[in-house]
Structures are given as C-alpha cells and as structure tokens.
Length: 270
Image (tube, rainbow, N blue to C red; front, top):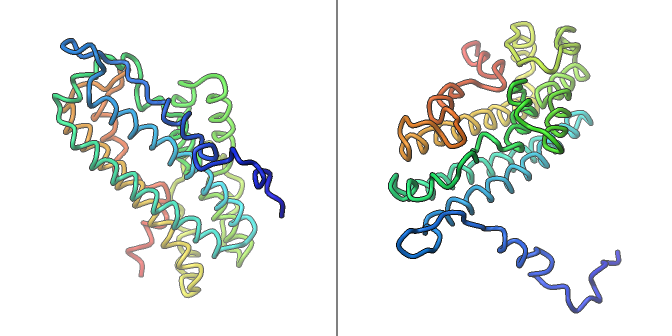
C-alpha cells in the first residue's frame, strides 16, 4: 500500500496531528484586573472541555461501529468496541479529578466571562444521549445549523438498544413485535417479555458477555453523570449554571436513570 506522505519531507508528527493548529485553539476570554492577562485557571477549564469534545467524537465513532457490528451479527467485534468506549468513560471520570483541583474561588475568577456559554450546549454529548436512547425534543430545539441537522438525524435514527434488539430477533426470536416496530424517538422502556428472552439466552456465553458489556456501558455513563454533578456542586454549589442553565439541580435529575433498563430489571430473576 502506498502512503500519500511517504516521500514528503515536510510530513512530521506535528503536521500529521496538526499540533500548531491544535495549540492555537485555547483562547481565554477572561482578564485579570491586576495583570491584564487571562485568569490562570481558565486555560485548564478550556483544555479539559476541548478534550471532552474529542473523546465525545471518538465515542460516537466507536458506538456507530458497534451498531454496524450488531446489525452484522458480529457480537465479538461489537463487544470489543464497547470495551474501548468503557475505557474512554473511565478517562472522562478521571478528568473530573483534574477539574476538582480548581477551587470555587479560582473558577469564580473567570466564570463571569463565560457569558451564555454552557456545557448544555455540547451538541456531541446530546448526540451520544440520542444514540443511547435518551431523546428529548426540547434539547433538539436548542441547536441550529449543522449541529441541529446532526441531532435531527440522531433523533430520527434507531438507537444502540434497537440494534441489540434486532440482533436478538435475528438470532433466536422471542422479541415482541412492538419492540421491532417501535417509535425510535420515544424513550426505551422496560419490557417483561423481552427480559424473559434475555434471561433464557444467558446460557450462551457470548450473548451474556455482550449483555454484561452493555450493562458496563450503562453503569459507566451513570458514574460519569454522578461525578459531573458532584463536581458542579463542589464548584458552584446550588447556583444556576452558566448560560442560564439550572446547574446541579438539573444534572441531579439525570442520575440513576439507566439507558438499558431491561438489563437492570433482570438482575432479580437469576
């Protein structure tokens, strides 16, 4: 295979990864009244959230691949890419440890400069939620342009759970018809008939492994949500969030809401 850059003397680590462009993207907006320079801790805040967005991009890349593998009856490959997403979720949680080195006073030093910017405006995180079945029309209406179009596509598309259900239907049946024909814009809700089928198939190690890995993903998302809530409470307490958001009070409402409820409901039946 010929590589386009193999004879290019200018092709370097820096040019391949676009390092100069990457390092130019941290643009603080705050001003320290004493020095006239940006507040010191704003740089950390920017870098952490830019890295979040890069990881969100990779998670979407991986989870779209998982859906393809499930639709192609490739359980092992689907589980492999799910495990990669789990490692990314652990990294997201680890980044919160870094953010929590910032005291409330340090965050307050530049918070007012953020104006209407808010993490609630992360289109990629909303895409992740939609792909995992957490769909809210109001959240879709927050976005316009290319972000709005991407979210509309995700809103209209089937979810990761739907791909898993289709896999079950093709491999043994026992899946209620209403789940195969459901409105994919609606939340995923528990189905006792599907749960019975899942339990019957747990004797198949590859199937059980896939179910447990999906449960790991669900738990990892819930862990990230919890740590995110606690970080916000630790940093700003019960104050409203930036951009007029409800801050920790809204984030708390997202806790302990599994995206794959059937996989949790079956635990009491073994």
